[in-house]
Image (cartoon, rainbow, N blue to C red; front, side, top):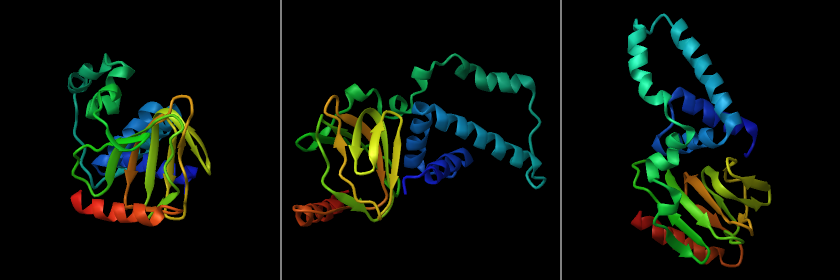
Length: 209
């Protein structure tokens, strides 16, 4: 599931404005951190814009040059640091009030009205998540540090998109751990020695969302 096609689909849907709030936050942050993804998004926006202009069924407005200057002047002096989506939505990462779930693993869940579950997660150096899968898709965007699993290593700006066919055990780097922005469409399904207990815990927790 973690191929180029599914990543490109995420970028295309963002350019088309068809994503919900949680996936829009994740996609915009991905574009901010990953220059290749940003270039592809720009290409998609140009193609979609050309298609919009060529559609005779959709009327276009006649803008004066002064309208364009008025709408964009406030943005032209912003540095890349100023437009970090994470800072805009959640504030600096160092100020996040983390909730420890278990030793070495903490999370922060913002209040967003959406069908999917958006979280920031922090894993201490060497910490891991037990072997698991998902009923729906799982999106993991690395904001700082790195982690690895059965399918590869992921550093700042990398995104991993999994589905129910993927079982993995993410392990944070021993040097600096990692902070990730994640989206899960359905509950986690755990496997292994403590799988039954963890699945029961997840089921009970779902009543308090």
